[in-house]
Image (tube, rainbow, N blue to C red):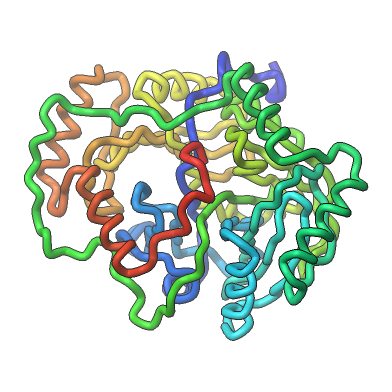
Length: 420
């Protein structure tokens, strides 16, 4: 059986959780993402023999980390990350962010594009890694599409220009019609997954230690952060067909569009494949052509939340049998029960079942999924009880929401659905 013939029995029940990248200067990028984009550091520590920092960041109170920076990447090769994608609520927010970035010496390649489905501001962080911030339109236009976008125009003119252009493109339709069609498709194919019940224990009676601890300190020099919400990720690939097959057949991501994106700013023309499992999101993952396979992957982790321990065990067996997947690493973080594995091009993917506990990260203990749920949860509970700084995850989320609201650093809510 060839790699392309390897298929899952059924798409796993999972949802997008977070994205992590390997970087050269973790401290410098921490400053940029916290000071300019408003992320708060939820935890940090050392990895790779205590040589390099790992930094967990969030603006979303339900997620301990949305974005992870892991030091140790050599700057000799370009990053293999395609982009980290955010959403903004309206064109005014996009204009405000553009003004902010234009005054920031460490941001570069600031470009605006009308994609028909969204109006997008592109820029590069201090290591040249591409970021995008988009405002959804009311249209679905087949992608890739790239038209000029002049944010100095009025909202009415920009909206009118996009509507006129969309009418001229075969296959365009109202966004709500596209969403209805994808809902029906993803439901029929078993790809549509909603947030599931957390793995629980019978008696979550932990105390609430250290109420004075600030979970999400704010960068001391940060201005009021831009109104954005993290939405998607992209990474470069070498063998587009093999990677599409893997993410479709093994992880259940559907191709929503595919084609050639013209050059935008300093970014050359590339082939794009858009993948999603959420009918409200045109893309959650983008595969971008142009991967240099001599460069180690810059994807530290593409983390996908999986719903049950039984589903995690099923995927463990399937991944172990897959000819294009490397060795699995099984870890109990206290916060989650996780399997890590390299995809066919060495990008690290995590499948994680969320626990009811929080312990400071980074933290890990070997995980044995051959144990029963009861034995595994009881062992993990005892392990968490003995870990300094633990608390119930529900308490962490509640306190994180209060802190983010009071500091003004909560992400723009209502832009990304719970499946995203």
